[in-house]
Amino acid sequence: MILRTMRDIGTITMNQLKRLVIDPATYIWLFTLPLLITYVLGISLNSLFAPEFKPIRPYNVGLVQHSPIVGAPIMERLESLPQLFTVTVYDDEESMQTDLADNIITAGVVVPADPLVHPVRVVSTPESIVNQILYSVLRPVLDQLMIMSAETVQFTTEVTKTQLTTNTRSNTENEPKTTVAWAQADSFQYYSLAIAVMFAMYAANVAMQYLAADFTSGTFGRIRSFGVTRSRYLFAGYLSAVIMSVLFVTVMTVVTKVFFGVRWGALSAWLPFTLLCGFTSAAITYFILSIVPANPKIIDGAGTLVFNFIAFLGGSTAPLPALPQWLVSFTTWLPNRALLEGYLRLSSGADLASLSNELTVISISLVVLLGLSLIINSVRPKGAL
Image (cartoon, rainbow, N blue to C red; front, side, top):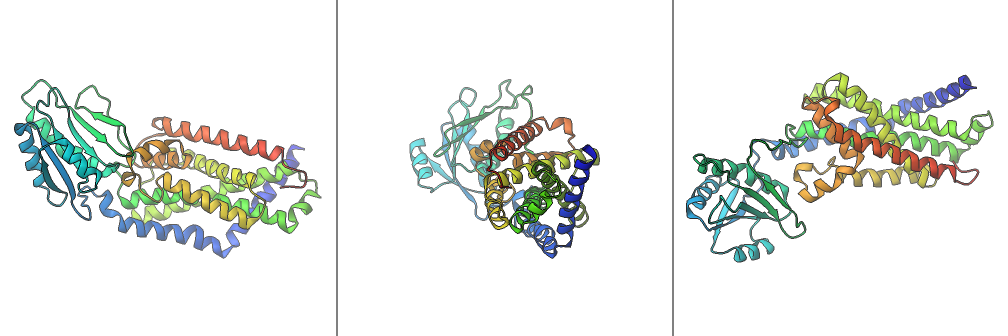
């Protein structure tokens, strides 16, 4: 019985993979297109990831100085970077906040009368890039001002309008250092990994379209007549989706490494993580198969809608460094976001043991998606896929 089950699953899986290989569209949609998108985004967004990042136009920054001693060097520093900033001086915070609300300025810096007691604040719209740039520019200035003091100048980034949280950054030796996953990635590095994660879901979805095509064409019924159970057939489809996803990521790994010099991390960490990527991508597509009618066109359309949506939120299309900070913080629960950050950390030299957060999100997503899919499939009417 076990041998027959394994034989049935193996036969169906190999047939699905054969269909993938002989389909000419495979080499266009699953290989040529992802590489083309990676190349275009890598070229067009190179400046965003470059250390010498330069915005299209300088950020207009407001400055309120309650302490001329601290405010003067801050003003001097901002004016020394005309490619990044233009500075408008305000007499009071209220006027600056009004112009910020009217989008006359992009951000504001408030220098308190006593920076040892009250923090220097950066007040901005929900735009994480300008926050990070201002912090990196002003932090050394404040450190230099207080180098002879036992105290450390406090620095606060306050985000107004749609985001009402306040992030405080202090320069203390005991504070744990956290680095975002994309800190060491250039545009080609980032998008090679991001597009691979996104299209891994498309590759897995091909297997689900094949299952639906078999159902609508009557092939599924003929296979059932040979004693193949529905659960065996669906498991073979899921296994096919895993393999297709892993094969796609493998090809992307080799090609981007050769042509773009992309780092994917050590093989000992890349291999199990890529297998996990395949299982996760297949779980997402299997869930879609479970909730929509078994029609290949419907599954293709539903998959495209879901993949594009979560790819945007997860950083595969819109880069995470360019997204608002509140959105970056909110989407950490997405499995594709965890996969992307995992690959980014591996490419920076991390090992699997350091990916505890990403592995937790991926594991929970796998259990939830597969559990819901099994529950839904168990109550589907007789005769359904």
